[in-house]
Length: 456
Ligand SMILES: Cc1cc2nc3c(=O)[nH]c(=O)nc-3n(C[C@H](O)[C@H](O)[C@H](O)COP(=O)(O)OP(=O)(O)OC[C@H]3O[C@@H](n4cnc5c(N)ncnc54)[C@H](O)[C@@H]3O)c2cc1C
Image 1 (spheres, rainbow, N blue to C red):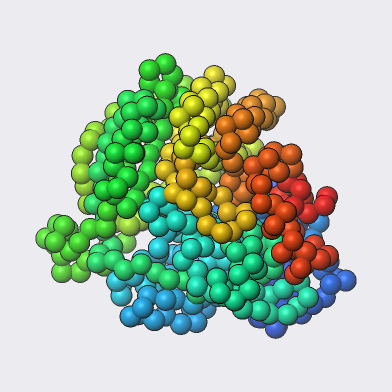
Image 2: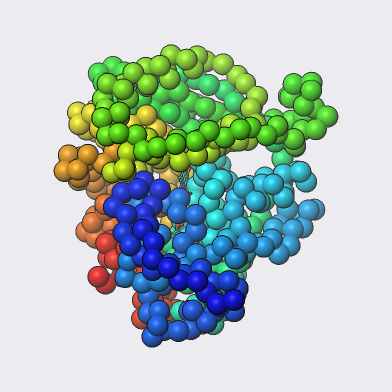
C-alpha cells in the first residue's frame, strides 16, 4: 500500500500557532524510502513523532511531514544485558511494557512516556536523574539512519561518531532515525521511594538540592513561580530512589513489577481564556504547597515519573490559544542569580502557570546541540496572552544570555536566530556534519528555519 498523504493542522504540544502541513503516512519502509528518494516531489522533509515537543520542532508548513506510525516494531531484546533495539516509532510506554517485567527500566525518561524513541533521541531528552546518569543519548549504543540521498547507514559512538553525536539532540535535521539500540537500567521493582521536602524560598531550594544530590538518583522540584518576596522560589522537592521488593507494602512484594491499571481522566474541552489567571493559579499553587507536607512514600513509576499522563489532553486547560513552555538552563556559577531574575520577572508579569519544574543538571555529552550542562534548569508554562507573553519571553531571553544560560529546543517556540547563536556556541560544528549528509537541507522544520539552522 503506498503512502497516504493529507493536509493537517499541526502544532506542538503547547498548541501555539497551528499551521497547515502536508502529512505523509508511509505504509512500509519501502514506501518511506521511495518518499525520501523522490527529491523533486518532496524536496523538504520533517519527521514527526508523537508531537510532544512543545513548539514547532515537529511542524513544517514548507515540506512534507512524515509520520512514523508503521515504524513500531521491537527488533530485539537481550533480557540478560538489558539491550533493546527498536524501530524509531516505538514509544517509551511500549519499551516499559516489554522490559519492566524482566527487571529493566528506561535509563532516563522525560515527564511523559508518550514520546517515540526517535523523538527521544532527536531531542536528547533528559529526566530527573540527569545529575547522575546524563541524558538519553548517552544510553544509545547505535543508530540506523535514512539519509537525505536515500541511503541507510549505521552509526554509533565508535562508527561515524560525528554523525552519531550530531543526530543525538539534532532535532531530526541529519536524517531519519529508523532504529536505535538502547541500553536499559536494571531495577528490582516498578516502584520508587519518594521523599517530599518543602523549601520556603529559592535559596532553601538550591541548598536542599545540593545537600540531597548524592543520596537520591532522582531529584526534581515543583516551584511556585508566583511566590514573591521571601517566598520567591518556594518549592516542594520530590527526591526518589528505586524501591526494593522489601520496601513495598506486603501485598505488592510477591509481584514487584506489577502496577495496577488506573483509569485515565480527560480534559474534555478547551478551557475558556478567563479560566486561567493570576488569581486561579495563585490559589492552586497555595493549595498545592499546603497539601504536600514533608513525608516519605512508595509510589509506582507512573505516579512518580508521569503524573500528567494520567490526564489526557491536559494541554487544553490553556485554551485554544495555547501556551509556550520556557525551559531555562543556567550554569552553576550564575544559577541562583539567574533563577531569581527569571522568577522575579515572571511574578511581575503574573503570567506563569502551576507547572514550573526545577532540576539540577550534570555535565553535558559530546552532542553539539545537546541542551544540558552542569547547572540548574527551570521549566515553566506561559499562557499565550499575545504581546505580553512575547514581551516577557524576550525579557527572559535577555536574562539568559546575560547569565550564560540556554533554552531547550524541544520546548522552544519563540527563540530568535541571534539568541540561538548566543546560546549554542557549537552550532557550526553541527552544521558541518549536516552539510556532509544533507547538503540541500532536505531535512528541515519550522523551528530550524526560525533559529537559523536552515536558511529561511
Ligand atoms: C508532559 C511533557 C513532559 C515532558 N518532559 C520532558 C522532560 O522531563 N525532559 C525532556 O527532555 N523533555 C520533556 N518533554 C519533551 C519531549 O520529551 C520531547 O519533545 C520529545 O522529543 C518528544 O518526542 P516525540 O516523539 O513526541 O517527538 P516530536 O515532538 O514529534 O518531535 C521532536 C523532534 O524529534 C524529531 N524526530 C522525531 N522522530 C524522529 C526520527 N525517527 N528521526 C529523526 N528525528 C525525529 C522531530 O523531527 C522533532 O525535531 C516533555 C513533553 C511533555 C508533553
